[in-house]
Image (cartoon, rainbow, N blue to C red):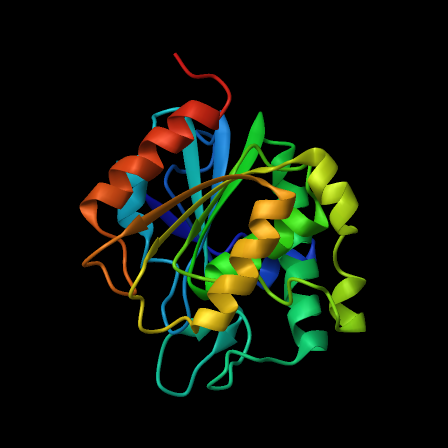
Length: 233
């Protein structure tokens, strides 16, 4: 079953009103574990929703629409230049608002995990850096880690220190195509270095998927979630 809503009537919180959310279950049936899905640049909350048919039954999916509408259609978590740079102050506001939304709904569930594709991976890994013990696992697909050295002061204040992240060792699945034409190699290398140093990383490289998600990768994602989401079996 699927349900799509903007949870305006569910809470007086203005933060929640900023997000349109597509849920895999109607209100009243959302139990167990929550998987928060964060789409890529130019997409919307429907883009990755087919994954909800594959995840274990104990998982409820909440697919969020990014807050920035694009003139060409679709939505973005933050504007991008050709080099994937962005306004760090705006990015921080998006990270904080998304984290606030997650914190508001997490009490309804036993645990929470994240899945982010492309630009959504940048947001997902930013959330785990902000709250490294707050998520059962993170699925990071075909994207990058924002400013791995946290050299921009506005972003450094949004994250916990790397030492705290490394101490928590959050579990991360990172899937990508070695020949992804969208994410610059420099960003891939920086992201790889940061992930290797600070998280419990499972990295799998695919061929033939480009900047996308193939059937083999979907199978691996489902296996990973089934292993690390609490309540298996």
